Image 1: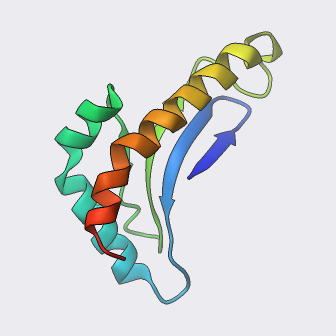
Image 2: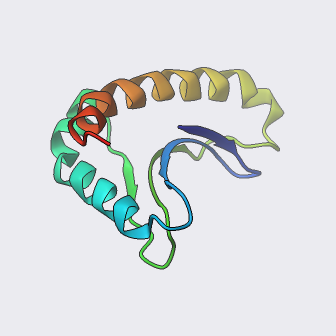
Length: 103
């Protein structure tokens, strides 16, 4: 689980990367979670970004906040609060599905 802030946005994410030799496993994990998309997004309470990243080893599931970034100092408090809330909801929405993978 990661928090990311760029100049244009803030984001919370599950970044799926189990190491150099794990591309197939990463995609298997992503595909399993994607098959549970409706239930995960319902539990999360909003739509998520599902990025399989076929040209990379890793994959990502995220929630982006486009209204603020590093240059939006006046919005940092709201962005922080929104990102913390989203991370808690993301972890909760994914937890039982990740446990079902039996990694």
